[in-house]
Image: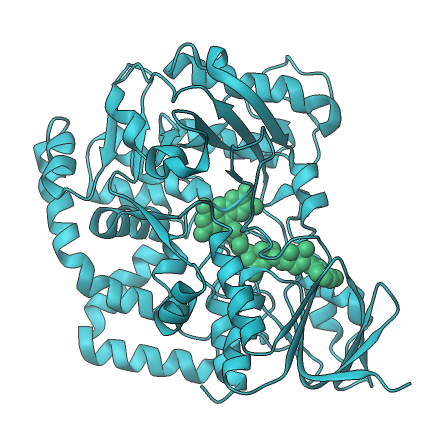
Length: 524
Ligand SMILES: Cc1cc2nc3c(=O)[nH]c(=O)nc-3n(C[C@H](O)[C@H](O)[C@H](O)COP(=O)(O)OP(=O)(O)OC[C@H]3O[C@@H](n4cnc5c(N)ncnc54)[C@H](O)[C@@H]3O)c2cc1C
């Protein structure tokens, strides 16, 4: 029996694979995607995991990267027709501090600046100046993130930028790109609370304040949230993959869930087919596109023609893990710093840069952190439709957690496997929130804990619960993501491509790798 044949076969239905599938389908390619789990969207998933009627985003919640992406700009109308809608948050993020104060960013610049001015007038002035310069800066820095990491594309980008901005700007920006959050924030601002509020964005990746290359994230997130706010998916983040899947199917694409790809077939130089977990062989005329980790791809292919690729793909390093705690609540937390905090999409509990560095280094050393950094998401403050009337969900992202537990930095938790450590570590997290919002436990209707081990079981791309599918430190980013010479989504096998968070431009919901590769394959 001859194998079923498509122009492109896509491994995994993460949003990057979906973006590639939609663009290739729109360009007339026949496309089939195979997803091992029962759901479409990978890390972008929503479910009633705590109690009926309470919809929790299991992983990604903030869809700002997607909403601001080139892919969304291209397909906005089509996706909207298939139900894609956003819930905007005008008060995107804040930090609460142990002394009972808070500082936050709202899209009302005067309100943000007034909060900062109460701490430092010089910092408020600097913030305003940075915001004023952001539209122009974003055009160029954003341009870099939307540039494929090929030598020719990069040289073109550098040439264009040099002509537009000059050598001094480029050197200053290069310095910023190499800086740690701490080095950059210390250069720009004087107040420690403001610095902590901004630095907490680095912890969404693996940029503790002291790590080189982290400065760009606090900068971009702070400025983008100030200028545009944050957006969540209306009704749940899964509104995004559902719309993508509907658009792909309408254009004739095939999406199957519950079937893993177990092998990539090739003739030693060119990928030709995939073998599925149910034994079917699906042939690919023009491309096999994998949305896996680099190491998992080499497992699927066996040795490729480039042993250096195979070795470096296997050595691609994960970042520390994450634990997610999903709560169904009778009411939002009573933040002692002020009831306004209930209006923010994210409340960071990351009191100082030193506390963030400590949590990171403890997790890197295999220790359960004394005081993990918490991103307390309040999606129902923005989109009440996700819970029954008057009720709420809380999305608690616990950063950082070790993949393998060697001990407890606080000396209280004896367990070294996640099945046993989940409860006491979750209690540590709830204790931290209780310090800032007394009475939280009394509001809990139901909870659902996802340890780093659970996250990896749920999606094997999250090795050790690493939510960004591979460290983003400079040595694994830009031209080195995932392997030098292959940052353009190519692999040593012709027709085989690797996309997704492990590849340039990295983690997040920006759909960059899927869209840029598909544009390249389809000739734009
Ligand atoms: C807890 C958490 C919170 C996050 N929060 C945010 C956020 O708020 N905002 C944001 O922008 N980003 C966030 N991120 C990051 C972001 O969600 C991811 O980087 C992004 O969604 C990854 O997309 P992807 O296309 O690379 O693939 P993934 O979403 O990882 O999907 C890959 C898919 O491939 C499937 N697969 C793997 N191997 C096979 C195989 N052999 N056969 C078939 N299928 C296979 C997997 O099952 C999975 O469904 C978060 C991530 C996590 C884990």
